[in-house]
Image (cartoon, rainbow, N blue to C red; front, top):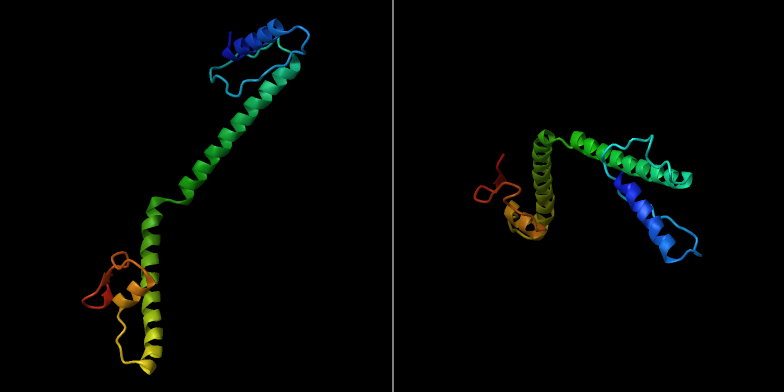
Length: 145
């Protein structure tokens, strides 16, 4: 006898033993055994509405599992790790170019106000960025490529 059927029968018996004047209610289990169930003999003695509820629960669980598997497949194909290296290199190059452009713009405005030299190290430090992450060579005031 499948475990689901045993659970339902024990619930029915417990409720019948407690109080015969109460209306019998059934609790449908949330998880089902993954073993194959012979649909010919399963649930013959159960009311149709309970069998329908059980079938709907199984369908809902299988649809949820299918949705999760589709999400996993999508993320695995969408974010390939091979592409990650090229995207990281592109991000680094663009970031370095943006910092050099920013330094040149700030230098133009600073030359008018003061004669201080603005280095990439000072600019990066003021922006709160990690010089190692940006591959900055502080001695030469340039980026390693």
